Image 1 (cartoon, rainbow, N blue to C red):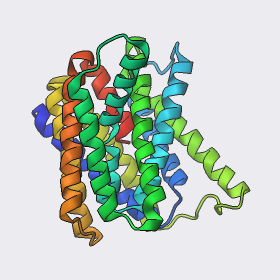
Image 2 (image 1 turned 90 degrees about the vertical axis):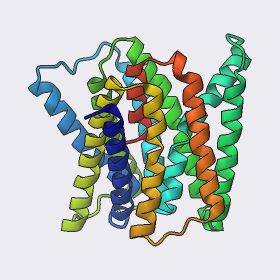
Image 3 (image 1 turned 90 degrees about the horizontal axis):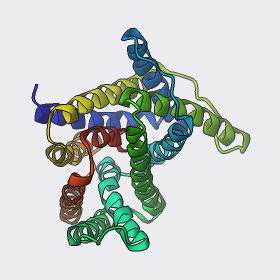
Image 4 (image 1 turned 30 degrees about the vertical axis):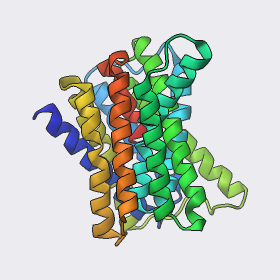
Length: 306
């Protein structure tokens, strides 16, 4: 299968996972979904690594901790935003991570004076935030503004997680190990957050399982892991910039799912905003293409697309 078909399949699976997360949120808190999704990832990735004789031992545990912290926070906030927002809106906000990366590059260039600010990056950032304004304003009710901002923060944390992934790549860590420790961090964080919320009286703790609820959790974990494997192979075979552009089909898939399963309407303003975010993300990826290697680009997807 070609890299382009692999990336399209991966984005479809990630969008399908978003549907399952939204449905599962009727039975579980976001922290529980993170915990169970991550547990499936630990079992699958860890089992595959051991079956192939690959080592899970790492010489850079602190780097993994930093990556897991940012990535798990991003994952938790994203799952929460999916439970509170229209699916197409939550998925679109998650694709702002490329724009946030451009913001960080601009700030780094200005503060450290290590490189001139690229006009195309500035343009991408402006386009992205105009797109966000158009997506949020027509689609969110007043009581959803907080969830919308949380979705934006999730995208920003995903970009921060990418920086940690890049550092792990430079340290020579293979991707399966990065994904394994990210998933392990998700299990621990999900369990701690769930327990903490119970202690504070904000949640009843772990919810009892039903056949439908357990099935949705299993689907979330399997879809996410399968999508990650497909995306890994796609980035190993194809051009990073082409893959990054094709990933934005995830927004199209999520809009289709929103219309099909949840009866959500997307008006003209929101569609224009989504288009601007896609253009901004592709433009930002294009501007960064010369400074990213393929393995780093691949691993970056683990932080944004759980």
